[in-house]
Image 1 (cartoon, rainbow, N blue to C red):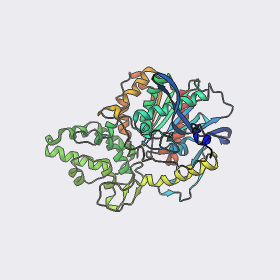
Image 2: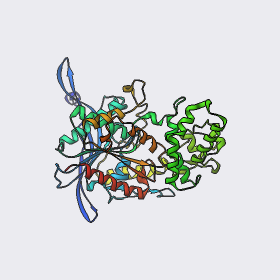
Image 3: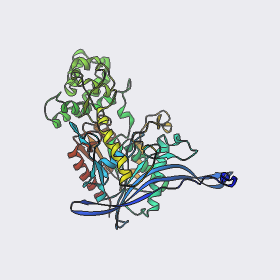
Image 4: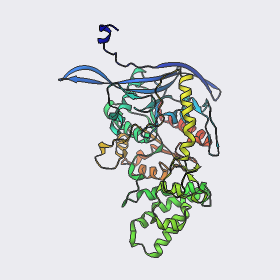
Length: 484
């Protein structure tokens, strides 16, 4: 190599997008669509001594988009989708629910063995909206740019700003500022979506048509089990009831028992927990018996934990006599452990059941069908993002309730769809209902919020009847909220 070649600077990274053409038949209608896959380079404006010094690459974000060929951009909605974690790629919504291709994984009691499968998704939201799947920095193939620290993106605000920049760039480069626009997030992705709705409005003037919040968590206080903080115990109770009912630990119909659990969790249970040692012997025994009846646990156990059933302890205790544990993400699943005296899961059987199929499907699909090649490992779930920073909250609990309310007040046309899984032990449905009921919005804006419930878990689309129904529900929401 010559001295001139040695001295030549390394060129800055560029987008490495690959475009392919595909088709799918949905309800006897053939849809021709374009898939664009690859990493989009995010840059920041650099000032040196107050003077503009160019645009510096900061991160390379992996994005997969699907656009319907020949559609009118002014009337064609676009949905930006992502999962949560923090640290999760978008593979779950991409290949589980929304995309034109989906993993064939099976369900509880009938999981597909390796090497798994992938097929068309005739219920794809692509029939009603273009789709853009975003993998936040350090997930999927997304990485910080050379010389940059990925930790800048491993926190609430850095994550919001980088995902917002991807959305702004995609919208601008594809001429879609006048298109109806939606965000679809799952789990921590719902917290991201709510934060993005406010950030996109205030920073970029981008007003959205709708948010699709799947397995929602918008306020961490609703999920906490801290000494002196009893709210979480009440808000998890109906989920315990659903899971116990599924495994035959309590009788009656599920709607009846859920209604009973919700009523108790709303009134008498918080009162009993709040009374503490002031409960009389009779009152305490009545509360112990009621919680036991609603959770399928023994009265002795409920008494020993002082009426406070923590969620991971519940998943290890419910089927302890059968030497089984139940899933956190999806309480319909059960599995084995190496020690049935423990109170912490060594692994979540519901996550173990789906990790393999989704990982294999993505790695196969992106290379053989989308024709994108990258030797980096595709990080389905990245541990590198932890510890995740919430420094913006300065010691207060993490919540985006105020940001969502602000976005809705400023944009009264913003519609919100919230999807709940009754067996979701990670983001319990009653906790999300509680948060939504306390949003600081006028009564008329509550009419912009709709809810959908499914007899499934955190990734409710693993359950085939729920997947089909949820697909229809989301399509209906997009069409009704697009205003075109």
